[in-house]
Amino acid sequence: MREAAFVRQNKDKWLKFESLLENKTSLTPDQLSALYIEVSDDLSYSQTFYPKSNTTSYLNALAATAHREIYHSRKEPGSRIINFYTREFPLEFYKYQKQLLLSFLIFILFAVVGAFSASGDAAFVRFIMGDEYVNMTLQNIAENDPMAVYKKMAQTDMFLGITINNIRVAFTVFVLGIFAGIGTVFVMMQNAIMLGSFQYFFYDQGLLWESARTIWIHGTIEISVIIIAGCAGLVVGKSMLFPGTYTRLASFKRGIKSGLKIVVSTLPFFIIAGFLEGFVTRITQMPDWLAILIISGSLAFILFYYVFYPIYLYNKIKTNDEPRPNSV
Image (cartoon, rainbow, N blue to C red; front, side, top):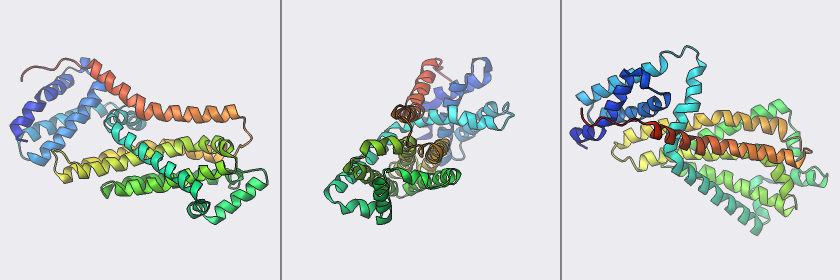
């Protein structure tokens, strides 16, 4: 795109942003966050294609002013983190709902493949889960405690071990997105097939409900954030395959940055999932209503934060947007 066309296309947006910065009484946090992200994207594009132009200098100054306006009054270190989770990330994640849906569908597809494969071949579960785990579980079933595996390790050790392992898996899913997204899909396939065959194994033993009400106490958040990490990997893969108007390198850098934000957003959820698995899942005698409440609450929390809240925040900002100036 020629620089003149780029300026014409975005001039009104930049003027609006500049006006908001000058007239601080009319500036809202939502508007500032949304426009700051857009102007930062425009600056990245301008630096790539017009590195020494006046447009780049103007956008750089505008972004710097906005950055100071956003953060200069924040004295407590925690405020940056709070802003990231409540404003910055949800607003940006609105753009990646399609990748999130694709990640979900990929995971569900391979989970079904895992269950179907286990139903057609009794040895498949042993191949996926290992003889030691299957034999141990069969022993627990024979002893009338099919979910005893969640009681064998000390609570704190289990919490820390599971949390660290899940975070490692999430970062692996994200990083492997650099292979055009194929690595991400491969790791998701492994985890989904394992889940599908695992659940079919308990179904075959007549314990589907017993396993589901126990496993999904922590698994609802754990599996959900693995799918979200898959979304991060797909964002990276898309940035390489479809750079759009950016150079492939510039697009890749943007994809890495966006994908990393997505993975960072999952860290508190992995901690919650690890806590549930270490301290709550082991209470296998809890009433069904309590297990259902935890599972449904976890699912609602995930859907709210990654689907409904980004849409709500985007629509709120869009509704509150002021009319743009017609000319420079």
